[in-house]
Structures are given as C-alpha cells and as structure tokens.
Length: 491
Image 1 (cartoon, rainbow, N blue to C red):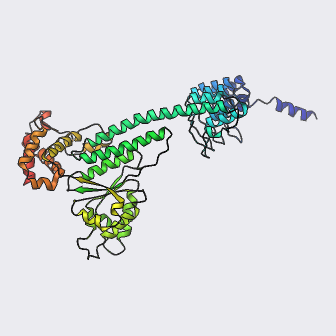
Image 2 (tube, one colour; image 1 turned 120 degrees about the vertical axis):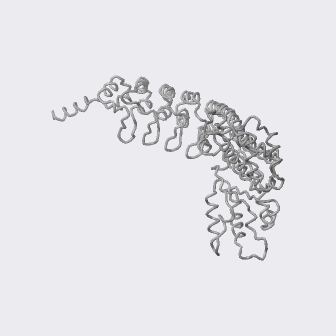
Image 3 (spheres, rainbow, N blue to C red; image 1 turned 90 degrees about the horizontal axis):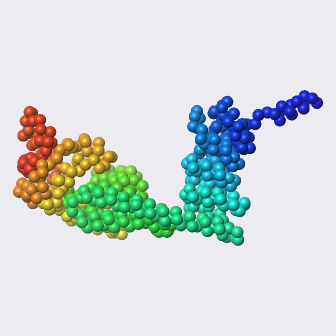
C-alpha cells in the first residue's frame, strides 16, 4: 500500500512537460526547460504534433508566446510549424479566439494565408470561433493584418460563406463584406500598376519593330484587353477568358514575321493567356515524312512540343502541292494534323509565307478561314525603314536593359561596337539607296541588315592599324565602313 502511495506521490511531483507549462502559462518553468535543453523550443508533443508555441498560442498564454517569439539563440522558434492537422500557431490562436496571442504572432510576421489540411486559413477558423463565442475580436485583428477575405478552403468556401444568414451574424457579415470590398479595390489598384508595367514592357518590345503599324495597333488592342480583364477579375467581376486567335502572316522574307511571332509569344505569356513564351519555329521538313505513315506521328510530335506556346509554320505554302494531282505529297496530311488541334486551345498557330502562294493554303482546307481569323500583311521595308533597322540593331546589340539577353548579346559579333555620329537615318538611307537595287531590297528586306553590319565591321578591322590605341576608334563603325559593307554584299 505504501509503495502505491509513493508511486502516486512521485507522479504528482513529476516536472511538467514544456507543453504543459506553455499551456498553463508557467513562464519560469518554460524558461528552465529551455535552459536545460534549447532544442525543446520546437519539440512536438505526442499525437497532435503541437510545438510549445502551438500550445501557448491556443491557450492565450501571452507571456510564454512573447518569450518564445523573442528567442533567437541557440534555437529559434518555428513560426509556421504545422501540427498533424496542418495548423500553424496562428491557426491555433484563431480557432480558440486568443486575440492577444494572435496579435503577437502577426506582429512577428505569421502568415495569414497559411492553409491547414482542410484548406482553412486562420480567418476561416476565427469566423467559426466568433460564431460560437459571439466575439469577433480575433477576426478584426486578422483583417487589420490584411487576411484575405476571398481565400477558399478545400470545399470552395470563403470565410463569409461560413456565416449563416440567420440573426446575430449581421455585424460579422458587415465587417467581412467591408474588408472584402476594400481588398478588391486594393487588388485593382495593384493590378492597374502591374498593368502599366506590362504595357511599358510591350511598348519596349514593339519599339524594336520598324513599320508594321497595323499589326502593332492590333497587338496593343489585344494586350490592353487582356490586361483590363486582369483588373476586372481583381475587382471580383466574372468575365469570360480570352483565347488568342490563330493567324496568317503574309509577306516577303526579312519583313519581320518571325520576330513578331516571338514578341507575340512574350505578350501572350506576359498577360497569362499562354503558360509559356515558347515559339516553336518549323518548316515543311520538320512536319512531313518521306513515306506513308510517317507524316502523322512526325507532325503530332512537333505539335506536342509546341503546346502551351506558339507553333510558327514558316513557308506554310510548301505544305500544299503545286499540282492538285500530286497525291503522293504528304504536306496536306501535315496541315490536316495541325488543323485538328487548333480548336483545343493548347497551341496558337501562325502560318507564314509569301502572300500569293499562301492563297493555296487558304483554299486547301474548308476550315482554314474558320480557324485562322487574323491575317496580317507584312509590307516590304522602305529605304528609311532599313536605315532605322540598322540603327536599332546597333543600339539593341549594346543595350543593358534586358539581363536575360546580356550573355547572348556578349556573344554577338557586333557586341561592344557602335556607329559613328555621322551614321544618321538620313545618311544610312542614302547609302542603302545608292549601293543596293530595288530588286535586292525587295528580296531581302531586313535580311540585308546583318550581313551589312558584319561586312562593315570587317572593313573596320581591315583599315585599322595594329598600332591603334584609340579605344573609341577601335569600336566605331563609320559611314565608309557601311558603304564598303554594302558594296561587298552587293557583289
């Protein structure tokens, strides 16, 4: 009998665990425990896997919470630790209406958006507590720290959805609705600022394009519409999602068709219409097989690779045989494979090629014009356009604005070089007019610019002496260099 009493006495005098001390608010006991074993600060109790901070927050042991939050050495408290239900200490404070503890956690950066296993945020749980206890102080504290009123749990319910329409909830409903409206307005303001930044980015990309005024206008329309949809949704409006149209780019080589496709890829990704900015550039040889049964799988592999971005089919007219009687040509099969996925929304297709031959593509398939709804004509560049491209090319080759392209620019043959101040649009335009023929310009358009500049740099190298020490002269391409570049190219 005495032994049983001794065992009971021993159990009653056994030191409390750090979790029990945290629950009861026994700060000295918590401090002693941590002095003896600092690692206990994030110790998990059996079954529930709560840390001491969970327990202290869930029982509003304010002094213990304060002490735990301010420890930084040798161990630091895990502010976002999750118990077996995926609840953080803030969840524990919220669901038990421990407003002071919640305030302390929030002041130390606790996340109001953390979600438990059931998808509920601290705001969801604080609403549940306020319904039971008729005390909305923790709800107010969370809202003051910008807890998201529109957050949804795993059942798609927002905190406001959890309120019944019965009497007694009017004040809480009014509180949540007022914050919900304010948050929508704030998101709209942020979306507006974000939208302006995106439009500025688009304008930067468009500034690299010479001419193409109609197309630029259309790109601006799309961009503005898509970005305004972002703002509409930020305000809580439900609007239908846009699907970018499939397009045909008609024009001679060198008129900027491929460059525009790449810019369009960036635009559609930037505004969230496409999941990637990938532009997969293909020609007939990438799509058409040599034997029966090869074309379908080959084309489908290309389409799969292009999913989420743009499939740019250059010289698309080569898919259609010149003679209708040519039944051995598999280009039509490739075109039909592409047409079969154009309604899926998984890929945006752009067909490109000379204006006249592209008529064969348009008339080859009854569904072509139903699916391809935007046609853009890329006119040949004027002499002034070509001169502008020369100056833009040199300026972009040395621009530091885009960090992602910096390494690519540094590897370019013209990186670090510049044009002499005499190389104005007017002077370069006169050179191009004199040194090239109209036929040459029409056949090459912008494709004339790169060889011109490479030839000009080679001429600069040829005329410089090894003894030259003038750093400016070593990297400056002059009008005479451009003239020599054009003459070499024209030969």
